Length: 203
Image (cartoon, rainbow, N blue to C red; front, side, top):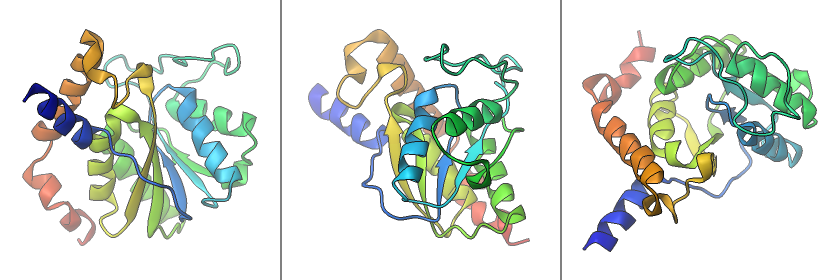
């Protein structure tokens, strides 16, 4: 019984798809350079022509906390997640002409909604996109990006943030805390606004 519950939670939270040729690669806000590195890798493999970054500062602290890893490589005084990921992409061979994004969002829902505005302002027609996020953040990221881009297909390609994966999340108190927190947020944020979100873009 417990094994089945663990498996069900893991299957729901940890979304992972096989990537395909897409119109854009989108990076959800954060401070793990591995997200930007994966986006750069997929761009160099020609999975999409552009990368769209989202991320301002933390809603909790009001600032960018600094890289969670590889600070010896990504060592500039970044003001926002957008600045940070831009540097990661440039250092990994992505030209500035392929990078779009915004530096105002502070949480996942804003990441998605502001990404939609950037796409519209730059006439980026997105019918299919690869979504780069932390593995335990995949379901909630997908929820909000689908809300913001209701007519697009998203393919999730994740990285194991904080070392938390589908196979090990239940083996540590920290992994349980993060995953159950995500499960709770998915429920709390599944509101009428989310269900009826397509109306946001029809007015």
